[in-house]
Length: 434
Image 1: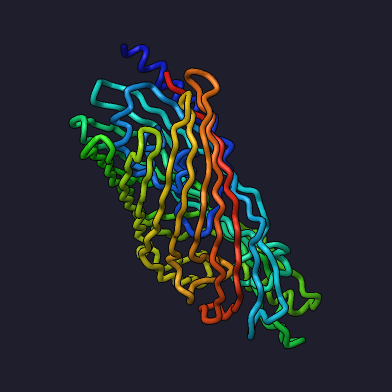
Image 2 (image 1 turned 60 degrees about the horizontal axis):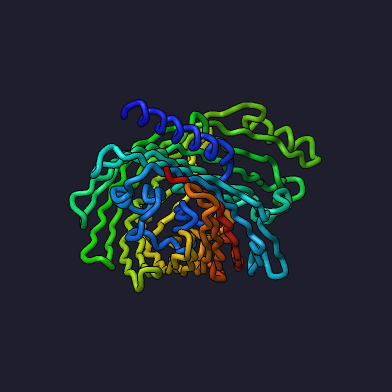
């Protein structure tokens, strides 16, 4: 028995590495990412009570207690942005100015495996990306918001081992620790008034890169209750975590053409050096509550509510050795997202699903800008699974996400603009059952 378990654990690790290593970059408006499985995404992310595949590690760890077979699941999805548009407003950058974000694509992977230790105890191993964003503006050297941000990248990977216990045929609990690995990159231009021309001009480009990929420990837990044959109620919780990031800043001088001014600038900034830099980010807790009901033996409906503790993200402090600290107030607020989905079990074990979601932005007007232009979002989803062999299922889904148009004229950077974004998130995965 132990030899078989060891072989299966090795298989889980190999599959996890194969999917995780190419996952080089993440993108989302805001921090939290919920698209951690093709079937769950096809149902609009309403999966806390269904939780019937290994992605329950993310959606509700208790769900894996009802899995009596050895299963592996992995996949990846793209983030495509056909539209990510900025229109300027008065007084700055002014009406008539417009630009776009780079379209990408960005992509990342997830992988899970469930192993039965006994009839009522299951071990799960997996990884996913709970938080991430990418905000790359086109033509960064001429972008009018370049003194605020030219590009922002944040990536976070969660690795977890969980135990799920079936307390009875109607009740299960599960949970375990999460290791969070975080990486951040920021870039912007610095400007100053040229005393010889009295014009504000670019004097330097700066990039801040975190190093050492800090590992923080947090936890997740869930409960799944089946009051009757057709009804399921699920509750899950991912604890928040504070990440302290350290790395370096690089400064590259941008020559203005005036030798005297350029010489004065070169004495003020540490060009040509890696200067120690640090910041801290408070990542939110996520609570999911779901109710699923089998309308027929083939049709399941689910409605979920996600409560995200964004109020921990109040300030972004960037410290660079030898320079004044830069504090960027955030003032984010806790938010709700509502998700609903339906799935249909077709013949031969295949399935179809569709869903809907509405997600509130936590970001106040005073904080919205080129660094992160977030807004409320409405999405629709569709997907399916096809059995290609007895033990193998190909899964696919796609989310169509509309970011509500948002006009900001009162932000702290005095950068007034209208933002409008539309994204498509295709997802392809597999599930193997042994």
